[in-house]
Image 1 (cartoon, rainbow, N blue to C red):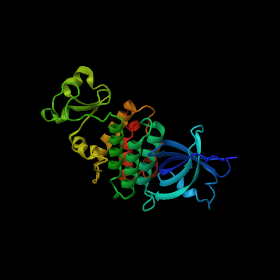
Image 2 (cartoon, rainbow, N blue to C red):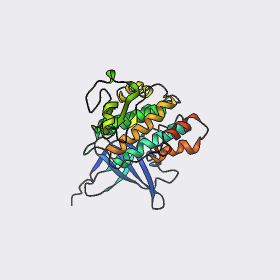
Image 3 (cartoon, helix red, strand yellow):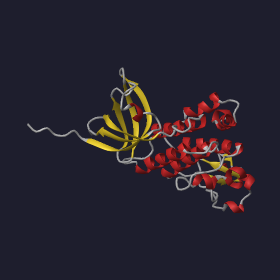
Image 4 (cartoon, one colour):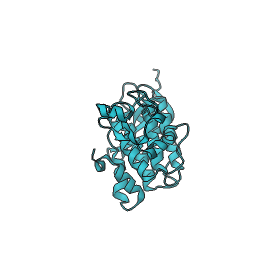
Length: 281
């Protein structure tokens, strides 16, 4: 009697989320380049000496070997090797919060269809950049990731000219510009008076000045610290844009770590000010 080999797959994956199952096992939600989102059962991974334990921690990149049975929703992790732990060099509050927040968005929304190679590439690059980022630029990297995620879905905010009348940004007053999720981008004062800016937020000169840095990812990631004002403005504006355009999106609970953990720090003040609940939305 012949024995057919069990279907299997191997490749790099990013662990988005895990939850315990049984007495010692873990189920991991993993984003892969070739097979999109897969859910893996890691038998015994909660045991201290398990060879799978290091492979199923959120945020880690690993080269994995797992079953790939199309008739099963849950596959089995067989082994692999760790490629990157983004928190290995510095487990700071900011790095942890912005890492988990990005993972939460991707796991919840699962943007894209079919083989999500572009989504995996974006997430992998974000994790790699965040893992070696200088202290203070984590917020800029996170907002750049959100913009790139919107771009991947074809709904990047349009900020070169008014989305309603087409007038170039350079011909408009900087103090009279708005970012409207419903309009898909910038709206001038004249169009805003006509109702085109419902639910929009004013675009300040400071926020506009940082747009090119945020919009260049993943080709070029931001390398400078956002001011408190810019972090506040982009935090709220991108939240509203994602909420409007990305089904299933909601503000990542991981960002609450910044508010609760370091209430007296500048990072926590920025997070609190950019939190939509603090901003009256």
